[in-house]
Length: 248
Image 1 (cartoon, helix red, strand yellow):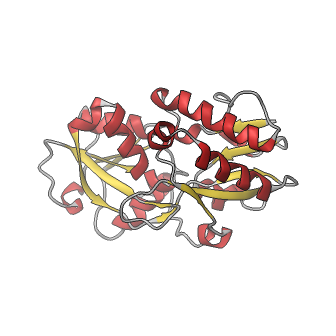
Image 2: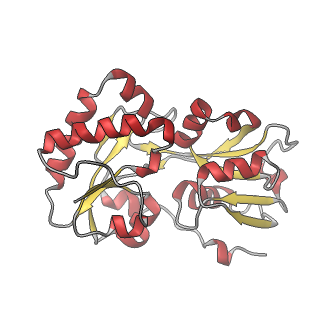
Image 3: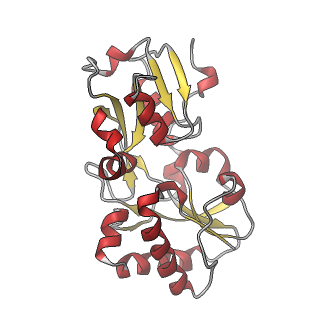
């Protein structure tokens, strides 16, 4: 069996995530002894022996819908967002003269990957008709996008709000950046399990584990609870054209 909590698992949080998984496993009285932290995420998400994983809303609506079951969506208590929702922050260098997104037209935009809701879909939907970037830079990770902006290799990037909070807590790079604008909230990164598994039992185990977590771990992971967001809410989110279709 596979358990994967790699969407918010930077080195400073790994011990807390390990304890969170052990609490879930104890509630289930089942599951792998350790979290998976390597391998291709698509192989993990679609594995027939997947017990628990966290994915992104865009991969879910684009490819995973119908192949997996939704378990629930963690609520991180993000300001300005309903339970289980998040938004993206459009970041620029702290010394950037940009005062509004329109000032970024013709400049370089860094994004983590094409099927990222917070790094690509949300900002492209938010900025349609307002900004036309001159060049796109794919970085492979939100933290890498933040560094590209801090180092001047890109003028802007979009990060999900929890990643931004974690960078501010654990990574000095955040001090070289500032938020220019925020997108509208959308459903957050859901937990999934393989078809045929008891998704309700997994959800109950997660809720009990969150409630039983040490306060320090719950604070470190920003976990407030588990929200029930229907599949239809994820499927209704707009999917903009991908980077390869972005007008040159």
